[in-house]
Amino acid sequence: MKIRSARMNLEIEEPIDISYADDIADLANDRELVRSIGSHSFPYPYTREDAIYFIESQRSYGSEVFRVDFLIKFEGRPAGVIGLSEINRTDSNAHVGYWVGKKFRGKGIATEALHLIVKYSRDMKIHRLYTSVVEFNFPSMIVLMRNGFRIEGRESDAIRIGGRYYDFIKFARLNI
Image 1 (cartoon, rainbow, N blue to C red):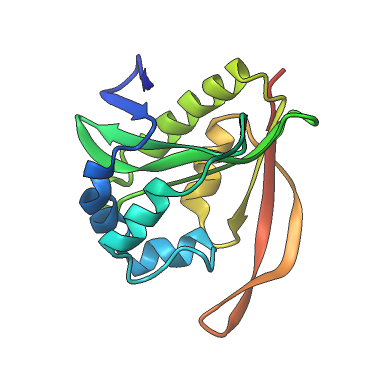
Image 2 (image 1 turned 180 degrees about the horizontal axis):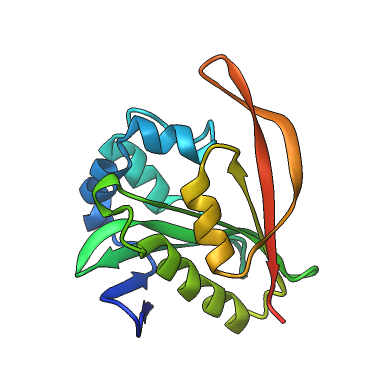
């Protein structure tokens, strides 16, 4: 499935083809990206094998999809990844996560990709989207707020990066 933006030369596509493993590894192998994501499960250095593992990882249990990931393509080139995880059909909510490679930042790509995912989540009948952002990741906070996400709270000293604790800022939006 490909979802194209009407506002810029951008599309998101899933499933992510294994042929993009090298591109994903090149884009994700960035110490600054790993620090700003705030996830200990995002490796650094990020290798081709890490990308293959990500691409081939399980996204459903039987007929129940619990995760969907899209490759972000800008001007026909891989630029990052965006997706929904922890999809909960009972409560109609999902976690949203995204990242964009260093050479593609500052161009509105994450903002537009998130706009497309919000529309996609509405089609999935997801009522609430949520995520957390490390307190110093202001660009990501701006991306979220431009897409109608609001701050719901703060999780104090939630993650330790480089020997120091940082807060997570909790964001959510309702698809109403």
